[in-house]
Image 1: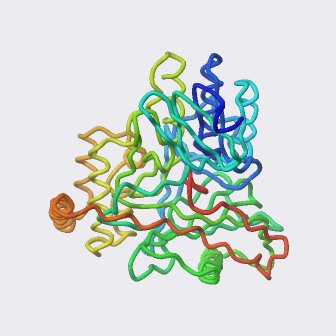
Image 2: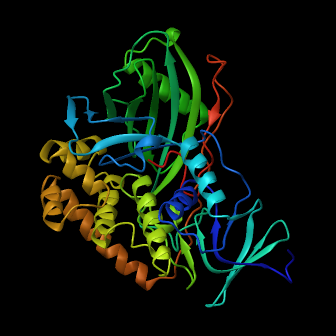
Image 3: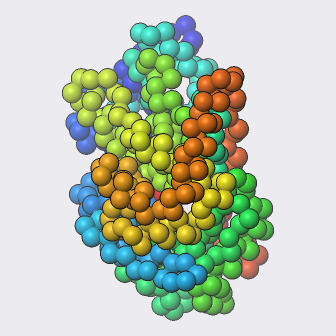
Length: 430
């Protein structure tokens, strides 16, 4: 193929990580067989380079791929530890290897063309889209589905980062409870501006992902993440002499009320974080990515345009903007905010809210469980800022920095640094 003779297809997928992998599997699952498909990505994704955690009902499609799932989770603060029963939901962990394997099989069954090169330009004339790649090849398509890293359309009124490091720990004796995950443990030292917590996702009584996470404007250093993780390990009462770090995951996810246009041009549709799948108030992404993939596949199977519904209701994006502002300006503290949510609402309602699945009546109950005055102040401030944004030129959004990845731990010679830099549908992405 040359620039003068591009490959003609019906659909191009730009990017090959989680969002594209879920879409390939969905196209196969819904029996889409009459489309010419090309996948353009500079890397062939395989193996365990990220971990997703999400909640939902038991699912016949995803369940065979899960590493673990839990019906009970803990939320801990300095004052108490609360065990939550998620019925009828469950919290689940999915590692990337099985997702990539399923996508590779779907790609084969769909007879898709793979171009291992970056997409350098994407030109949409309203009728067809021309994609030129770094390998000198070009593809012309009716639709482009783009899950590559993309900045928001403008700077947000509040912009934080969810940044984290996790250790996959193997113990020489039973130390973990495989029936219960730790969802949020706020006993970690809190940063001056932001929120921190640890969590534990046990696969067995001897193997678990133990992670330290911050919601804050700035990243830590490599040594800072390791020190925070070591402190959380000690807080859990785990003896480091009986543990081995088998893998290390790092990541950065944007938490911002900045807009991510899901359809920047008539025939280009964005998916994953670039398409608004990341929930601004929590960083959770996987469930929205999965919904996007299923909606696009159903549309194509029915002969419709491959445009998914908005990842979250508009009112949820507004509530996220207010909550982020209240946290950022110090109106509410993170541990207190989440503790009150879980204390005054059924766990299942809170989780559905964080996933964008609650009704307006349920959301009124959730808002009533927060401290009223700081939220009113944040709402007023957000309204003023919105007006100001309309009156001044659009400010460019800051780039999302890559995850901090350091040298293997000297105390754990078997450790492996894992997790890609920030982008696409992003690392653990929750």
